[in-house]
Length: 220
Image (cartoon, rainbow, N blue to C red; front, side):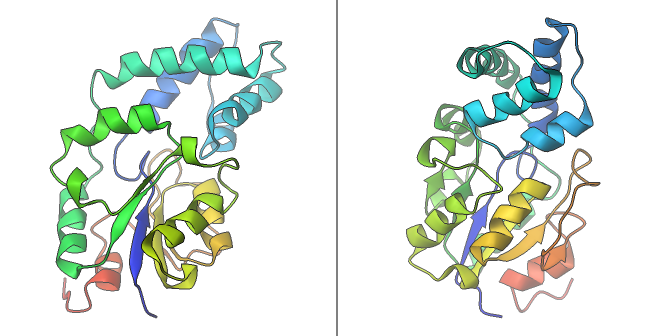
């Protein structure tokens, strides 16, 4: 197996933003007499903007316009971001390992770019990213492979030589469909989702099996 570059999801993989999205979804639905739930989060995860809101509308048979619902959601999410998302366990060690490997790596997230730009300035390694792809750059969200096909193009490599890290079932499906070597790193929010096709389902960002994929000299 030859790895020539790495593409990373963001929400739930690098930063614990899923709890923020949960709070936002719950507030929106409380206003409409419903509550947010794990089955709905599973359906929305990885989808982009209006498409994610359409999942909420369909799930609860809401009469909202998805564009208006997205605007409401983004307003609430901006407030949540002011609290600052926590890094996922082992994030800095994983980034340090990537930097030592010399492999190009970048971000491929369904989040809007304006939210990515609020999170990345809080970390020291933002300048090491080879590329940043957000939900604003794609027309088809995960589980469609578009964003990971674009990630491979950004690094000038064949998708089959790209390592992708994902935390969700939809994201894993997108990465697998692109042909990438896919590692799923489930969070507490996604641990029961479908990770079919993944090369590895890792315990964390510092799972020795994952670190060994980018650092052949890793001995644990």
